[in-house]
Image (cartoon, rainbow, N blue to C red):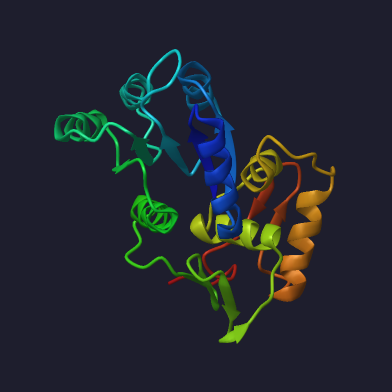
Length: 226
C-alpha cells in the first residue's frame, strides 16, 4: 500500500516513515500544501493520505477541500495539533475520513490506517482472501492452501496490491510507484523479478502478464465463472 505523508515537521515525518516501513507501506513524504495538491491532482497512485493541517503554502484543509471538489476520493487521515471540537468537525465536514490529534500513539496510527484502507476497499475484515491465498496486513502473514508462505517485504507489498484489486490491470509504472515510491532507485526488471518470485512461491497462474500493458491477478482461474 502506498501512503502519501504530508507533514512539515521533518523529525515527525521521519519518525512516521520509520514506524510505517515494517508495516509494508510505501511512504512518500511532502512538506507543503502546494506540492501535495499537485501530487494528488496528478496521476500518482496513492492508497491513502496522512495529512497535517498546519502546512506552509496551502494549509491541509485547503488541500483536502480542493481534492474533494475535484472528485478525488482517496482516503485521508488528518493528523494535526488542532484539538478543538470545531476543528475536528470542520475537517470531517470538508472530507476527512479520520482525524488524529498530536501527540499520538504510533500503534493507534497504524490501526487507524488499516481500518481506513479496509473501509475504502469495502472490506469487513482486514484479511485479504483470493484463490486460496490469505494475506493479513496486521500480522504480515501469508498462507496458501493453509500453508505459510515466506515473502520478502517487496513481494508482500506487491501481492497485497494485487489482492486488493483483483481483476484490475496494473501497469508496470504504477506498480513501481506503489512498491518503491519516489525515493529509491529501481532496477528496470524489478517488478518482473518480484512477479516471478510470487509465481514460484505460490502458483504459476497467480499473475497474468499482459504484453505491453501490465499485470493482472484474476479473481478466479480463467474459464471459471461464479
